[in-house]
Length: 299
Image (cartoon, rainbow, N blue to C red; front, top):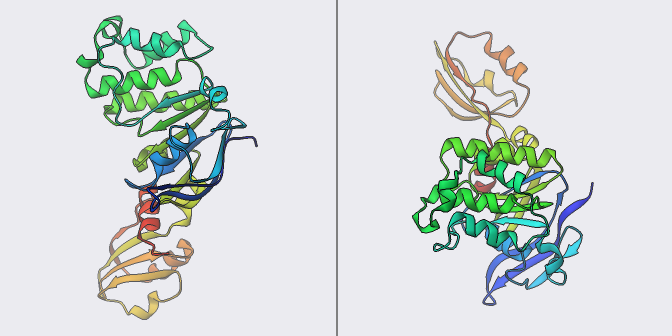
């Protein structure tokens, strides 16, 4: 499948010693929503700035839409939508002036498409006529998202896009991403909101301390991480019956067991069926469990 974003050992060192990212090699495929996960300072924003040619790499290379992001930056600009994190649009412009100003940079201008975006985010004509300095943080975030999609870009790059949005607007945003992907668009979404990535992304990358830890489908990431099972028995049972290789015991006092499920759950159920159980908890895994797993690993 065609790679819309491709990096090869991309590295950024600040001041000759502080690592932004190091040897980042990845591919984002056409028609997918690609989640880029990491804690604050992990290298997410550095990666985005390199992809947009806002800063220059120390070494390595990056391509977007088949073009080198440094040498062919101007050819890429009109094909990419960008919504940065924590940046408010020009405060002295009205919403309408801002969208028209940004629209001048793009080859495509579909007023019907723009109207649909405004309706999706419940942006009225009155809202458009107001100065952006009068907007709440949520309103400013909405218009930043709208401008990123208004020219029907082939690729959208977003840094913490739902910051400041209420739950209803977050839902509208996720629907927009799904519709955009289904129409052939590609999204690179940097976030620390794990449930957001789990809900909308096809694949997810985890970056830690500037180094790419893993890239997998969200489904595979979740399924590969062991779940924690908690059981309260009515009577004490011997520890030996639980040491079968299916469970990694974390805590056990005879009546209460907390363990990681490592093997076949059906074998565990077969063992448990011989004993009376007061309570059992086996919550479904989430991307948060996976993220914490990778961030707790030393190597």
